[in-house]
Amino acid sequence: SVSRGIVHVEEESSDQAAADDSKASAKTKSTNGGGGAEAKENGEKSEQTKKSSNDADDAWHGGYFLPDEFEVKPRAVCHFLRKVEKEYSTRKVNPYHNNIHAADVIQSTHALIQMGGQDMALAYTPLEMYSILLAAAMHDVKHPGNNNNYEINKMSELSLRYNDNSVLENMHASRASHLLHGLEEKNNGGAVGNDCCAAGILGSMTKTQQKMLRTSLIRSILSTDMSRHFSEIAKVTRHVEALEDDIIEDNNGGKSSSSSSPSANILTRINGDKHVKLREKFLPFLLHMADISNPTKPHAVSVEWARAVYDEFFLQGDREAAEELPISPLCDRTTTNLPEAQVGFMNYVVKPAFLLLARCIPNMERVVIGQLEENFMYWMKEKGKDDQPTDS
Image (cartoon, rainbow, N blue to C red; front, side, top):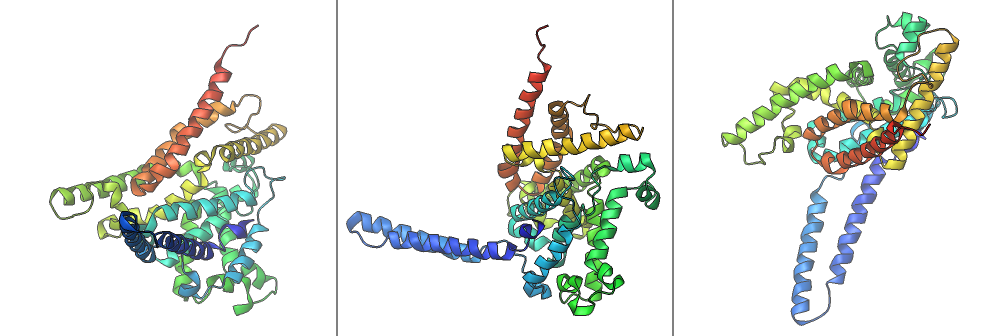
């Protein structure tokens, strides 16, 4: 469920730290005893193990420290996320935009943040981290199982309300705001104040912090509109290139003793006054990447998500045909070729965007890009099978 995707982040970090300490302790014990050259060698290993253990103690273990920062109780987070999960359809109703997708995007957002390591933790405040994780949880609440194109062509109530502009994303953001501030409970005569579900998720935040959280939440959810993908990628690219140029210039001028690779320094420099626009766009960009990260997942998972996407697309196409609306791109089950569509999506949308993100988070090159290439080759082979002429 959605709840499982975020509630135990702090506990995972503590468990990992304990596991690291346990391993280090075991290694140290294994070096005790023995004699002669072996004892000397084991003694050196023991010292190295102790040093590694001390380094591990100083390392960032990936926690968000929300209970300490905002007095947010894990039970309140769990209660809120269960409420959010009820706002999503199940897989039987929406093959793709369902509660599992929401949990997957939370986990993917968390994973990308972790890949940024301590540099990411120092670049953003706990409030900003909390906001992007909540945005991940609520980015598709109340999703109807069709896209903006359908809403606009149908002239639905939502399209009229939001003036054909990021129709579903505006609806998701609005609904998220209602949930975040407990408006549904208050309007229905439910609990208020500290007893309200939303009050628990906001903890001890001031009114100013709550406003900042909501502003960030809205901006992040709106960033998931696919129609904005290429324009936003172009903007982020320009900002990243400008920061890379500054880093190279500083390194060449002897102003920095750090690595000459720009990607190793971007997150450490993102707080500079010259690059405030990149800093503002980066976390929403990261959420958007998590939202389209299915092609970067382990192969079996990636294929299952791809088929789920097209199952939902084809249901929309069937509905459009029945309602005599124009059938949206990739939604006609009689003409859409899944392998060909996946190759195009991965080659022109996903891969360039993740390569851009990897310039900011170098660890992604090792963890994500290789899996993306493997999945791409699978769909290329599947496409090749479809391209082969059949015997008449």
